[in-house]
Amino acid sequence: MLGVQSRRLFLQVGLPWGAALLVGLVSVLYADWSTDASNAFLRIIAGRSWLAFAITPALTVLALFLTRRWFTGSEGSGIPQVIAALHAPRTEEEDSLMRRLFGLRVIVGKIVVSLIGLLGGLTIGREGPTVHIGAAIMAETRRFYPHRNPQLERRLLLAGAAAGLSAAFNTPLAGIIFAIEELARDFESRTNGIMITAVVFSGLTSLAFAGNYLYFGQINVPENLSGLFVLPVILSAVLCGLFGAAFNLAVLRWRRWMPDWLIALRARWPLLYALIIGLLVAALGVATHGETWGSGYDQARHLLTGAVPLSAAYGLTKWGAMVVTYMAGIPGGLFSPTLSIGAGLAQWVHAAFTWAPMAAVIALCMTGYLAAVTQSPITSFVIVMEMTNGTGMVIPMMATALVAARISAFFTPPLYEALAQSNYFHVAALPTGSFLQKKPVPPPGA
Image: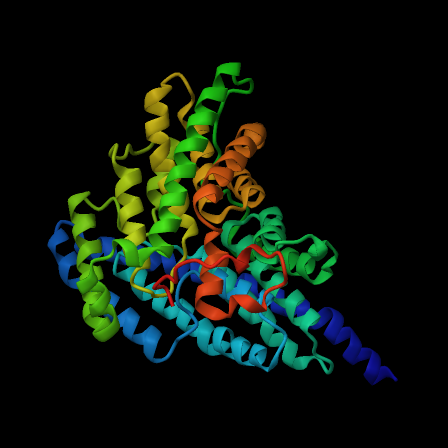
């Protein structure tokens, strides 16, 4: 009897708590390694930017080779993989999907190959991969449960994804909302106690090792913004909505703009294709004096704090670097580059309304552009609010997110859902009425 109770306690408490602590630990280590990799690249090319034309293409080729040879399923941000596992049909193919998209092999590939990409100066982030890693770690615990079922696997995936995002940004509330709004696309997950537990324990681990920090630092804005501030809100929402839709279309409709010879090269000689992608990323970095290399976190933070100004074209050049990097089809996230692009676009809005506080406009555009790309407005403004302690900007950020997401949705489906559908499972198997039943043009990210 005591043995049965001990096992039940282990399954209900020990196992999920332990997995959540592991998610937090891996997230903190991965964050440190990502920073070290990006800084190593900048140190190597300091004063010798021409070295990027050798380092970036070589590591892009290596990253794509490793992804295709040993780590299939780890490509891209990882969020489409989680969505695919959550919404895939409950058939025998589901176990195959779980093995292909999760597990130790994918965790190792996600971390190692994305670090290689950051060491090569590619425009990728670590936050999306952390979501994938968190979901994979929690999903592995299903093997210990005697009675596995789809509902349990769904809860574990959602819990791990929420814990991963929470630990990556130090934003526990955003982690929970992200799992509900972006991944599950419903509100039945509100009763998922495993998810809350995972977020709490991964957050405690992050807090213990990294401290209680604000991802982008404290924004300082006037307590009472004038009624005229509605004008920057409108312009930010429209600008970010259009740019976000353009990014989604560039990724999902890549066959329409990519030259035929490059499409053929990708199909027949993928490593040569990766070499060209690396050369393009290197050229963009050299042309912008290094502004487009890396995730864009430092550039956005410096702009937000007023430490270092960026070129007026930064939003556009970073947008281009992000599109080109994604075309490589290697592991790497979109969150940090997306927020950085939003910060770059804020310079244009501020130029139109110079009287508006720059930090407030940056918060608006980071929120708006992230909402436009993901079409998850609630997650977007909660993330930015928690990252900047911007509670005084909640209403303007909320309005910007809602309008930007609406504008983007007019032109394109939600990016992560479209990628999940195109790359990992057949659309016909989805529940009736799901947005995922609308068929996009397959992207090259898989």
